[in-house]
Image 1 (cartoon, one colour):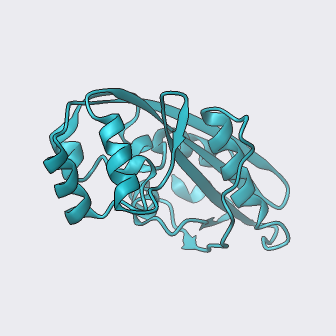
Image 2 (cartoon, rainbow, N blue to C red):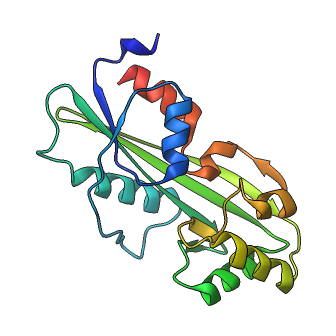
Length: 191
């Protein structure tokens, strides 16, 4: 069934989680990344941020794709207290982010852009994640042992902290990992 896609697929992401999720969906693809500075206008909110960044990443592939090729780019943010929580730059920032999420809920937005030479499709998904309270010792344990510096919101749902602190989610688990797989599957089949 998956051979009905008439495109060679490139994934424009270095994320091992995104790569594994796309592979598990059953699609053949190659990794093709182009570094993009992830800057967005400060007035954007929620999925406007991730839509902008996914499209910005895809724009880097203009002139790089042949007729029968497409690229998938994506961006994920954590939205908490009307603020974007991106990837922490250091241990202190990771600690502060996790401390703010402790005992509270937040939203995880992921946007995906599928781009070919002829067209572009952008979609997003939102998952609400509920954290139980974390002690400073638990936060430090997680940062020391899991080094979540490549993860939006300073955590991976699939890591120890997800096992320990997440009491409930509303929406797609895989969206929190960085790829709304169910929506992506449908979008690729319809592209």
